[in-house]
Every structure is written in C-alpha cells, then in structure tokens.
Length: 592
Image (spheres, one colour):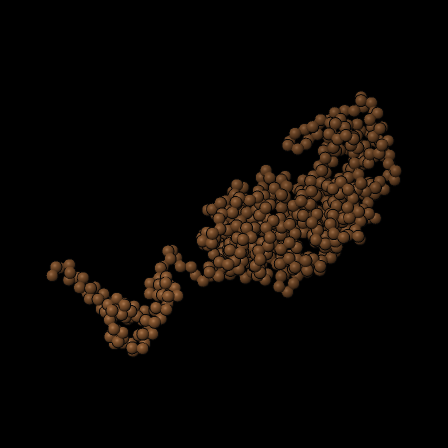
C-alpha cells in the first residue's frame, strides 16, 4: 500500500458505508428501486434487504411509475438547483405587485417607492431581475410631464399615521421637498401652525395636517382629488411627520372644516414673522387674479380672465407681493364686485394690525382698476404713498398725442438683465374727480406699447426714473400670479365653495413663500420662478435611512445638488420638533 492511500482509507470506508447503508428515506427508496429496475432483482428480495414489507415495496414502485407517467421531468430524486441566492418569501409575495405596476408603465424607481410604502424593502436590482424574467423590456425615456400623468397604482395604500421613527430604510421619488424643512424650522413656521386655529384629527395633528397640503403643493401634484403615487411615497409622508400622506378623501374632508377666519389669522401670524425677519420692504404690489371654476357655478360672478380673453364664472382673489423678497404677504379669495374697490383699505388694516410693531410700508403699487379715486384720496390722507396707472380714455390719449415734442424728455430706466432702456416722459400735475388737491401725472411713450402709459402718484419727491422703475416692478406680481396659476394649479379648483378655494389659496401662498425662502438662500437663483426652483433643486429622489436620532437623506446625483448640500450643512445640528426632535443629514448618493 502506498503512503498516500493510508490517508484516503477513512474517507473511502465512510463513503462506501453511506451508499451501502442509506440513512435518509429518499436515498433508501432510490437504492431499492435501482436494485429492482437496474439489477433486475425480485421484489421480495429487495423488500427483505431494505426492511420493507412486500406490499410496502410494491406500493413504492407503483407510485414511482405513476409519477413518471404523469410528469416525466418531475425528477423524483434529483432536482435542478437554480443559480444565485434563493429568494425569500417576501420577494415572491411582491412579484404580483411588481408585474401589476409595470403593466401601468411605472419605472423601477417608482415601483420601489411603492413597495417601500408597503414594507417590502426590496432592492431595485431584484425588481429589475423579476421584470426581466417576466419578459418586460426597459421603458423608453419619457418626459417628466408624461410620467406625472400615469394613473394611480391599483394597490391599497397604508393608513396614514404619525411616524414612529423606528430604524428603517426606504426610497422616495419626492424626497427633494425635504430640503425645505430646515427653512420651515428656521423661520418658526412649525410653531405658527401649532398656534393657528386650523383643526386636527384624532390620528393626524395640526402641523402634520397643514404640512400634508404643503407637501402636495411643493411636489407639484396636480390636484389632491386625483389620487396618485404620492399616497404611497414615504418621503412625502416624512415631510409631514407621517408614514405616508393621507388619501385624497382625507384632504377633501379636512378642507370642509376650515373657515376664512382661520386662513386670515394664519396669514396675519405669517405677516408678523416676515416683518420680524426683515422680509418686507417699503413697497407692496397688489393685484387681482381670476380663479375660474369649470363646473356649474351659477352663484359665482363673471370676472375678466386675461389668459382666456373673456369673462368667466370665477372667484376673484387679491394678492399682495413684496417686489424685493418675493414674499406674498396677503391673499383673499372672498372678493366680490361690490367690495373690490375697498380691498386696498382692507389690506392696510391687515398690514397695520399690530400697532406696537414699527411698520415701514410707504408705497402701494397697483393697477388702474384696482380701486377708485375716492379711495386714493383716503390713502393720501393716511399719508400712504401710491403709484398706479390712470385709466386711459379716448380724450386722454388724444390729448397726450397732441402734446408738443419739446415738452417731452428722454430718461433711462433699469430693466431686466441689468440693462437700461430709453423712454420718453412728460410730467405734469392734474386734478381727479373725487380726489382733493393735485396729483402728479407722468405720461410715458416709447415703452413698447401702442397706447401711452399714464402713471399717477401722490409722491412729488421721488425722482422720475425711480418712480417709473417702481411701477414696472409691479409686473413681477403679475408674473407671480401666473406662477400660482400654472405651478400651484389655482385654475384647477376642485370646488365652487369660496371658503375652500380661499384655503387652497392660503396653502399656495404658504408653499410659495417657503420656496422663496429657499431660493433667496441660493446665490444667483433668488429671482427664478417657483417652477424653476422645483425643476432645478426640489425634483429629486433619495434613499432615506432613519436610525439613532438621525434622518440620513442621500440624494440622487443632480447638476445643482452641490449647492443644495452646501446650504444644508448649516442645519446638521438642528433638531426638528415635528420629526421627534431628530436631526437631518443631507448627502449625495453614488448613483444618478
């Protein structure tokens, strides 16, 4: 015997005994059937050797033949093992949901967001592999607007409850709105909501209720009555301190309990905060906006819609906008034809609500149809400066056109892009019906309009070019109103009830102001629109991990992400009251 054979002897002996004396039932049956079919031994001999009764062994052989006849490839003793890690039961349960969502053209990222809301915690790689096995190809590249038009996932969302902040990980496609939370905390908006008159429910407190509306507005959700993926997104729920946002029926039910007084008191509290933070300058631009209702609104008045070029059954609202900070300070949707001229006086009462606070409002800038000459006289007697456009009747236009050319002079006024534009002006003093004393009137031509513009003001000291510039800034409020209509979907009102629309307008104002606080903190981006803020900074997905008092948000790579992360570094030690006093850490993920 060779030396190396000595070491192999125990292995050979053990292996031989395992084959001659099988210990497992399946192995024992295999050896018995092999002896019966291959070695052609009698059934009685095989039964005796392996300890079976004769009848018992013939039953085993009969069942073996029957199994092969019914399913020749069943592999009674030998089964093929699949490659890779064996999938757990959780993946198998989620398979039907994955297939169902892909049939609705949801992406792998959206599918993962939905599965995370149901607590499956399956990776995107696993989802992709399942879709490949089921024969689904990659989805074509689609526009963001196309993706937002997808129908709601036909899966029941979890009930919305206060988040317990237990250790967990999930993914969110709307996690970009979470970078607004530091500004909500910094400017005390959470406390203002807590002190407001807004209602709460047994399951969802006051702060989470209002922030749920803000989350939808900030996420560019078309309407909260159109149930969509947002009610499955954990990131949107986290924004409001919930597991997921409530379903559409909750939003509708909540707005039934809100009154106009609640909205006005809330705006007053915000107004006080803006004053304390120095976010309101000496000028306020005011304008009306028409919010159309597309249903049967017989009880609504007809108001002119410049966008449609005709009168529509609609709700008339007023907004007050600060031209420097972009903050919308005041809003009211309960304006009728009977009281629209006195809205400007109501705004002054709103602005000067707290007589102990030092106010710096000096100028009101508005359109020619905003109020009448009698109210202009009241403003003058209250020592409030105003700048507005005079209504240009046929006689006024003809008179201006006949003025001698030598009376006109050319001035240069700042315009967009740090440029200046030359216009011709003629300054004079005139009298108005219902207005005591004289008023300063500036006629303007060469400004790109067919008819001359006629600015009137009670400020005789402000330089001419500054006066013209101050009025041209009023067009910013028109742009802001246009943003409110397009981005915050004010033209898609879900109710003809003025009170409900007023609440929707208040939530739009709150969200707009949070966007402005965020944009004003971004160098060189403070003048961009809300739509651009959303597209450049807010519209982003992230992986979120909650553990040890920290909410770790890892954003997907994006062009402007470095600027966001740089600004968020200042808030790493801030604790968030509505998030169980947890801290938030913002960082970038390794994927794009």
